[in-house]
Image (tube, rainbow, N blue to C red):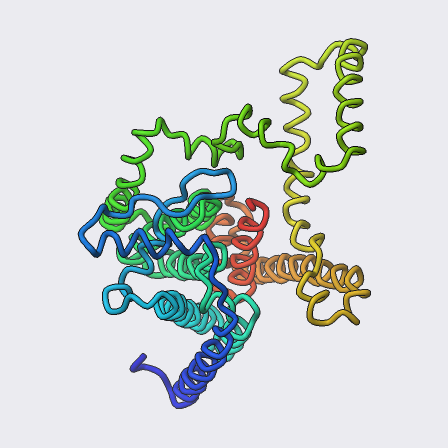
Length: 401
């Protein structure tokens, strides 16, 4: 930072002022904090350990009745050392993490593109709905963007500098994200893909530190899972609840749809007809045929995952701007068109940057290896390539979810 010129220092000063203003906005918005039952283990497990009890090796219960990993609990521990006031713990912890995320957004835009881009990106994030609500809500999904930004920043410097601290931090933060919400497991696959695409340098020191710290972080939870025969991890991977089916059946009558006689009658009719339909159905497809059908369905599943964000209902629009909710279909269409247009423009800009590189080095066309090296250099050294990197990372996250 000592090498900044006057314009860059001015932008840094504006950024600091913007962060201070956003903190005031977020503290005011924290009045909307509502106590949820999910906060009980987040707070209580850490307090029990600080009072001399058992170290928190698990977190909250997930939607499949499986124990989450405990990093969300660990995240609250530093503030919990100084105060036991629950509201202060939740707000101050999430607010500090939110400010750190905003800083990395600023640094990423600053270093990959320009100081102006970093300032705009940080402002858009910190005053967005997620940027404000994640400053006081201890909800795992709201914290994931912060982990992802830090990982992208580390990947950028892993390629640019190759220093061990960035390699180690990329792996450690990825593990922290995974231990915050299980869906972040896909970030390991994304790092592997980027390692192959960008040909990231192998830094044994950084890899050793990152892997060792990650193993230490995972050890308490894995020890807990060994005693439970990995039932929670199986539930996460299969998306099947840990509650026995017969127990679920015993309480199925509590479902609202089963409270109505018409629904019960319809269910009985369906169950009576189903065996007949199965008996009259032709031969079931073979395992090979099912495997081939599944392989051909992967592109459609990938596209469906990318479009999922744009097909969901705009609930906040309905709640706060009911007049605009009637236009929700048009708004979703405009958002999706803008998204795909941005991707096509990034690919076009990257292709033009490659053409410029080929025109400057015509001998490269004769060597596939040299052409591959130029394609990788263009990803890092041009703004078009860096735009494409960010979009590829975003696409991987969205499609994985």
